[in-house]
Length: 237
Ligand SMILES: Nc1ncnc2c1ncn2[C@@H]1O[C@H](COP(=O)(O)OP(=O)(O)OP(=O)(O)O)[C@@H](O)[C@H]1O
Ligand SMILES: [Mg+2]
Image (cartoon, rainbow, N blue to C red):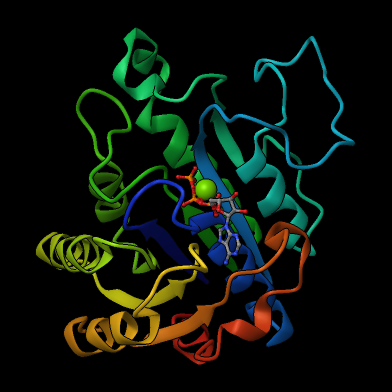
């Protein structure tokens, strides 16, 4: 059984897309895995169109893009609420009075249920490593409380070297292992793509697990083959 945490250099850098790639790669390698998005926040547009709106649900619309992509990437028959503890319709509930609703106990219980049921659980954080879960707790604190190894997704763009190295240092300073990092090409027009990856490979003290190119509608594609070092993840089991 393994549980690992996927963080990123920022919001919208490709944590969900990289999580899909990891889930698909691990499944191709013969491993059972589900993705878990503890806290899902608002978004501009739905990603899949065939989502039902259940007015009775505590979750409001069960239409969060990240949760649906994680559900759609695993072969396991998971429900929305199996793989998500909280869905909010606006973008920053952790910073408002609503944050009192977010209870670590529920996150711990929901995670424990998944780890008891599936061989591997990938946990996707929200925003970046030290982003808040509620007024007291950061995602990093919570990952550390479970001693989760961490995968760092780097959206390759200007400023990403600084954000990547800061994040890797912060993870290590909290006593956690960076299992590896993923280079995600979110900006096809960026120059020095190869040089940025070379610099990060030199400076991050963990292996590059794969490079995801810029792809049309990546949430609907097979991405597993981009994770070329999947054995670093299967070794956690
Ligand atoms: N390799 C890629 N090629 C093309 N588009 C991409 C790629 N990676 C991510 N995107 C797009 O960039 C956007 C952000 O990606 P994604 O949702 O995976 O980021 P995230 O870090 O999970 O964001 P959040 O902080 O909201 O969880 C999405 O619209 C996604 O489709
Ligand atoms: Mg995401």
